[in-house]
Length: 456
Image 1 (tube, helix red, strand yellow):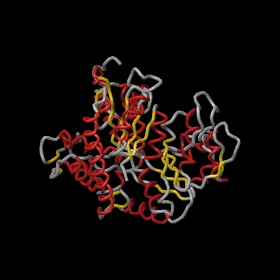
Image 2 (cartoon, one colour; image 1 turned 90 degrees about the horizontal axis):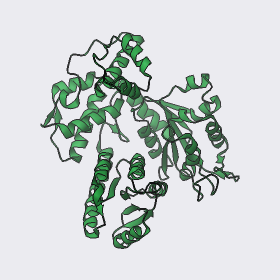
Image 3 (cartoon, helix red, strand yellow; image 1 turned 135 degrees about the horizontal axis):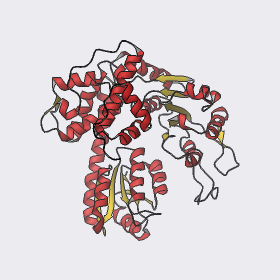
Image 4 (cartoon, helix red, strand yellow; image 1 turned 60 degrees about the horizontal axis):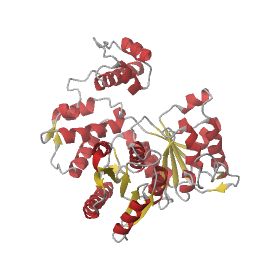
């Protein structure tokens, strides 16, 4: 079977030329714009994509291509996206590489050069995916891609094993960065629907006016720009699992429509009148307090109880005991192998700092720090400086809930201020609060204001 390759370019002549040149080695799929690229990518899951940065409606600039790059990588972070750029616009290609593109080539296309790039990229993609699957099978302390020996995580693993054998809706709760999508994937992979598709969608990442069409699909002509009928994520999940992340972000109108689907198994596309029946399991997740949202009238109580037949509560990393060090060692081993830096290890001080750090960003923060340290570290043993952690002795553990909350708030505020060089506006935006609120929080936590705030 030929490996799949997606080519995204608004120039029909270039698409035809590339398909003709590459069809003997690859199963080639074509798209001419961002929407078409995302739809084909979700349906076919090609490991490699050739992406022109100049796409409509802005063919003379890179904005649409960079947006497509971001959304493709959001669908599959392991996909290899190779961007195309004109000879006079290599800066755009470098910006794309910084945003996650694997490589770039210049137009006009030199087919021989492109074939070499593609061969190397497909080999790398294949090796990475084989390694990823092997690690899933061999990690003795892992479970479906998750590593954790702590009591809270063993309880999570047990819940996954039990609920996977059923077909009821599941609600996954946990802070940002705790791995809610990985848990949803584990439930899917261990269930009877494992051969079907797993379709994720982040309800908070898509504008409200587009989310209904993204979920339920639309009929041709149902709104401006609806040039053809399009299936939504629910239809795409037929026979498999639909994962709705950040379910608390759904508008009241979409909550009603989703509730109907859960009750009856049917829905209508935007602009459609024909009920469509789909057999798909639903798993939802959120880091929001849905009970508070219900009390405030922002989330429907009947929908909550439909979603929360089984609830899996993910612990924060700071609640998982020695798992932080266990995860850190696992991430380092994996990322070092991927980057050809085998033999790296943490020194004792770094491991102590990892164990004591509160990890407000949870597992995602730990991953990012290790990835950055692995790239920047000049030696075989990673230090607290490489990880950008505090090497000082940790304070005694807080004795109550109020102290624990204040300790976490203090760490997050200080981290945001360090990251943005003391700029209050940027730090407030990072924390998703207003400037006055940040000032009040700093005063409450006895965090000194910058002596000389930069103009913002």
